[in-house]
Length: 449
Image (cartoon, rainbow, N blue to C red; front, side):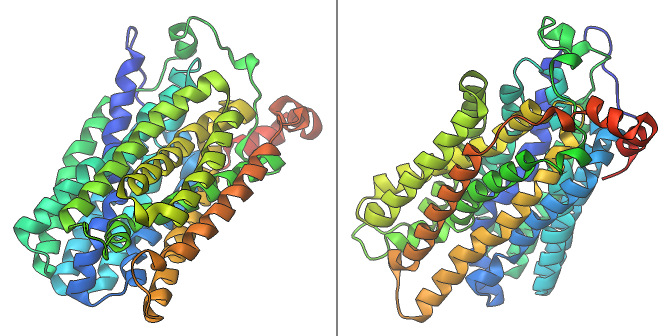
């Protein structure tokens, strides 16, 4: 499947909707917490066990993005979106079989492993293409697409809750909900496959009024990027920011219920699902809002906001969150907006440091930080909550230790961001060519991820 070249006169504004159709679908992953209570009740699982499909899905997202990044760039966005469609939808169908037969390992395999591959390939499929179409506003361009991943749960959370209410929350009802998800997302993702185009040679420069040329930026290969401290510092920044956000997001519905269970205004299951939807809205808005802001104030400054103000929000939740429902909700919304903004801004940060040459492949490798965070965040929150519950504690006491750990992680990310500097010219493609010789570099450029 060759990359589809845009015809003369093709509008670059048709590319973001194609990307959105993919990201809105795979963004369903952020609504996993809606399925946790029914699965725990129907299959007798603990909170840690019910998080396994989500955790494995995030692990596979990072791994498939890392190992498939160069292949995605070589074969183009249409190929990548097709692979994402097949894997993501198949994951739901396998999970439906697992729920129907009461085999939890099939849900882990389907949603986590197979679906996770679809998550990773689908996530990076449009990024490089969008940056090439919008060299003048890379933060905005990637924010438009990646906000779909954050906003996917805004659709999926109430939709899933309604299906579980209609079909039932037993194994057969969960299976039917998974089946509907798989078939529906396959149709929606197909729209992106059919619509996406790659720019004609230098079309992105002409569309942008000639403001950016290939010689205006560094050219660093994906392999060479791994040898720079900038890559690993950004790896730490992304990992810390994601760990701090994903722990709350994955546990969102049970967390808000527990925080106010002993108050005069407990949170119902429907209200908890609504809270998940609100977090998804903040996640989605942060991806387009904060990433667009980064085009104006710079990537390092925006990450200072994400990590610094995020630490303050966690402190407020830990210290006084249980005494005020509006304060708890507000702080959580701000945290999730920073969480989403961090995802949407990182491709533009990479473009600034390494150039557009292999930015998609570099981005894919960096998403291994997401895989790590996908394990750490839910594990920290769920494991500590389970241990606290065993110790006889309940309510907000289940999460106090976790919240302080998240604050410490954000401080680590803040320090790493402060250490980021421009990439030394010795890592640029021309310098590498001079040191190693053109044939070696050409071979390096053609190697798969």
